[in-house]
Image 1 (tube, helix red, strand yellow):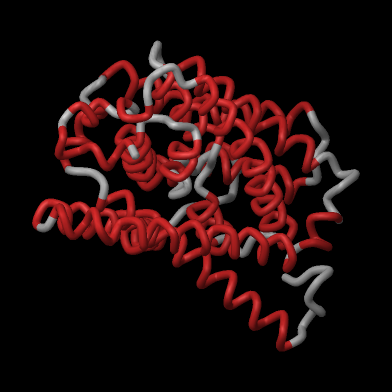
Image 2: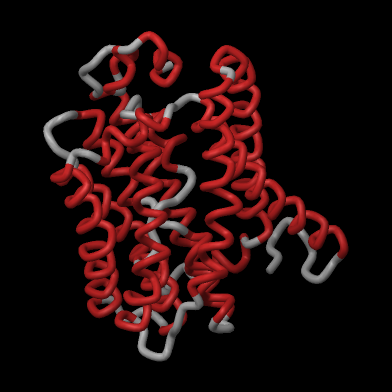
Length: 310
C-alpha cells in the first residue's frame, strides 16, 4: 500500500515498505528492552496489587472501549470496512508505545509497563471473545496473536529485566542506547508509514473516518483519566493506555480474516489519529504533574530503582 511519496508498485516503494516494517519491529523490541533494563519484577508487580486500579483498567479497555466504538459506528454512517477497522482496534489493547508515552507524560513508568502487560494478556484472552460479538462473521485464531506479542513484546521485556537483575550497573549503562534506538526507529516508522499510505489516508477524508477516529481516542483518553485514581502519575498513564490501542493485534486479526484494504487503512488512520491526540496529551499531562521527577514511581523511593524515574 503506497502513497504520494513512493510510486505504486515500484521497487523503491517496496524497499521503503520493508524498512517501515523493520523500523516498527526495532521500535517495539528496543522499547521493551529499555523498559526491562530500568525495572525489576517487583517494580512491575507492585501496581498490579492495586485491585481497584486494575479493575478500572480492565473495564475501561475491554468493556467501555468496545462499547464506545460500537456507539460511534452506529451514530456515524461509516462505510462498513472503516467501521470494522475501528471495532477491531477497540477490541485490542496493550500497545508497546505506552511506556514511551508515559515517559513523555512524566507518569508512573512502572505502572505503564505493568498496565501494558496486563492489557496485552487481556487482549490475547479476550480478543477471540470480543471480536465475534462486535463483528459477526469475524473470528480470531489465538496463537498467531499470542506468538507475535510474545516474541516482540514479552520476551524482550523479560530479557531486559533479567539482565537488570543479574548486572544492574551494566544494564544502567546500556539502557540509554536502547532508548535512543527506540526513539529513532519510532520517528522513522511514523514518517514512512505516513508517506507510504498518504494517498490512502487522504482518501478517507470526507468519509468521516478521520473525525470518528479522533473522537474515539479523545473519549477514551477522558475515560482513562477519570478512572486512573487520585494520583496524577497513574491517571495520565491509564488515560494514555486506554486511548492507545494495539494496532499490531488488530492487524493480525484483519490478516486472518482477509479484511478489505479499507479496513487496514482505517487501522492506520486510527493509529495516526491516536498519535495526534496522545503525544500532545502526554506533554499536557507532564506540565500538570505535581510530583518531582524522581518520585514518578513508587519504586523510585528506593535507591536501586532511581533510574526508572529518570
